[in-house]
Image 1 (cartoon, rainbow, N blue to C red):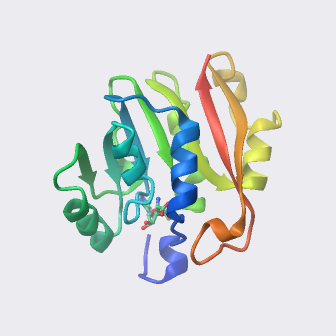
Image 2 (cartoon, rainbow, N blue to C red):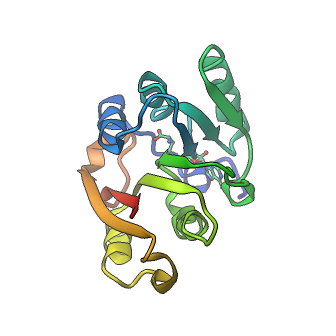
Length: 178
Ligand SMILES: C[S@@+](CC[C@H](N)C(=O)[O-])C[C@H]1O[C@@H](n2cnc3c(N)ncnc32)[C@H](O)[C@@H]1O
């Protein structure tokens, strides 16, 4: 990751109304461990805290990671400033609710679905075309994980759900352990 420009950092924060809808649909229960990968300034982190989750907020941008630490200093939120690609996934069951930068979506999914993953569920805001590819049976490695996980299409998000709006439509890709 290089540069500080908007494109380089994939900066399309979710509006709070839509962030709350994404979290509500994820069905997070109090006390559960939830990863918010590419947490930005906490659009999803805040409703996750309200739902009673213990949140691991992963953010590469130094200023945003500092903002997260300040904003959630009194909440059960651990901020990790790292590249999502270097993140060691928890060794205990966890959920993911995240609006990651589109550029890392494939790598992230492959890691979450890899053998040995303790993932229970994921709700990922991704490009709609990307979600359709993964649920359409053409997903990379589906032979390996499809026995354990079911992928589906959740909320459709209009472009105006983000500020600034991205150039493509988005949707929530849902992953549920069978
Ligand atoms: C699409 S924004 C979403 C921000 C926030 N989740 C929201 O919904 O408002 C993606 C976030 O991922 C961060 N990011 C970009 N590349 C990353 C990486 N490789 N690892 C972790 N975070 C990254 C960006 O700095 C940005 O804050």
